[in-house]
Image (cartoon, rainbow, N blue to C red; front, side, top):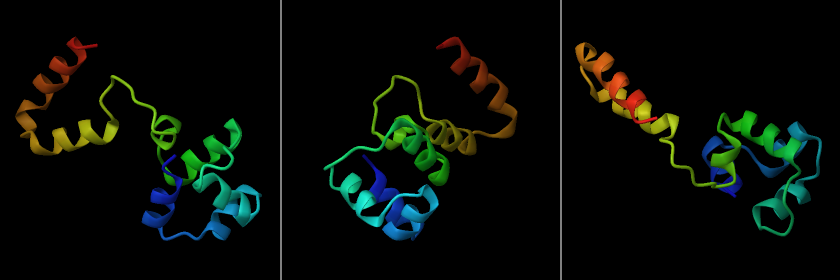
Length: 93
């Protein structure tokens, strides 16, 4: 699970996350070390807290491009070519 990575990136401590989720700091430590896993409602809270998907949080591989990847591609495309890009991507679905 990417919890430690996301927590460090956000600058939050284990206790700060614990307070937001209503669990103990030890619980967050246990999740980060893979001793225990959060319940689904806690995974959703974590995903919301870090503004990521549950799939990203649990490192689930999908065949779909991530939103981040698509956004990065869109940033590189000139405005006049965005519609063609979107049409091409939609045809892949």
